[in-house]
Every structure is written in structure tokens, then in C-alpha cells.
Length: 118
Length: 116
Image 1 (cartoon, helix red, strand yellow):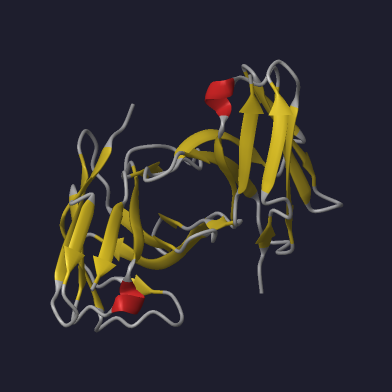
Image 2 (cartoon, one colour; image 1 turned 120 degrees about the vertical axis):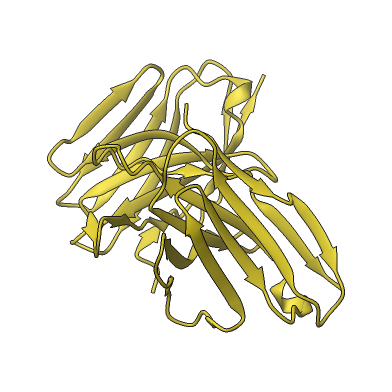
């Protein structure tokens, strides 16, 4: 089946630094990728929709200058958490939809990246 | 305002019995519903979906039922196996939006424990 890979799976950084998380679709092209955030015992919260070759669409309450998204190719989207603070510590998950697939409702998810900001 | 609700945070079931996970939604624009299974520190895995034009979809041990009038759906797992122990997320979509994007609204999840 379709595979989405995230890297790194786990990262610890100091407060004030920036962290980049990559999301790759390994065997399909994805014009649209999604970035989610999950806090403990909470649901996946959509942060932004990443569109290849254009600006990302952010959900209400998500700071676009803090969470920079770049979708430079059909197989790669990156999320950069800028000037990270401890409250940014969370589990970040990306998902992608096969551009050639019919409307089946399936999204393929990455393994997730756990960010811990000290 | 939570548009997709999974009111049971956890559920324990004996191996071999039926597991029933429930999900309620409030947005009448939702027309596609999905269930995902998630293990700790991993991304969700798609399980089964149902379109609003159907009231039942079955795939092996997994069956999803949709009651549109009640805005309620449920996932049945029969027979339950220890490997089914995971967090199950219900998700809903209002279909395509914008230029072919596909956004999901998730519930908070229900942790299923299948006891051997």
C-alpha cells in the first residue's frame, strides 16, 4: 500500500531554536498534504493544508509564521517549527492523498514526529 | 465546538467477543466517515469508511454502521483479537473542498483493550 514517511520520528531541541520535519510520499504523488498535531489524550487537530507549488492554508488559531510549511515537490512537504517553545512540544503527523486516486476518503499517514522542546 | 465526538475514552472487551465503538457528529454537511486505528507513537492507519449514501459497510471483521438521522456511526469488530488493542479514531469529511483537498475532522479516540 501507499507509504508516507516522516523524519525525524523524535527530536529534542532547546527553546528558541527551529526544527524541521519532513513528510514524504514514497510511492505516489501528493499534490495535497495535511499537517496535524496531537496532544496527549486529544484528537488529531488539523493545523494546515499543504498544496504543492502554492501557499499552505492554515486553520484558525495556527500561526503561519511560527509553523512554516513548504510543499516544494509532489512527494515532499516540510513543517518548520520556528523559535520553538515548550508549549510547542507535541506529536506532529502528516498525511497525504494520492493525487491519482478516486475519492475513496483514504488518507495515508506518516509515522508521526514527537517534538520535545526543553 | 467538537463536531465529531467519541464519548467513550476507553473500552475493554474479551477476546472473541464483539467490540462496538461509537461516534457522533454534529455537522450535517459531513458526507464521508472513516475509522482509523492508531498504535502509540505511530501514525493512524485507515481501517474502513462509509459514504453517507450507505448505512452499512463491511470489510472482514470490521463493519461500520451509519445512522444519518441520529448523526451516529459505530464500528463493530467481530471477533475481537488482542492485536486489535489500539486507539480508534472516528473521522468525518464534508467532501472535497477547494482545489481537490480533503480535510478530516477527528474525534478524540477510544482506546480499545482486547483481553486474552
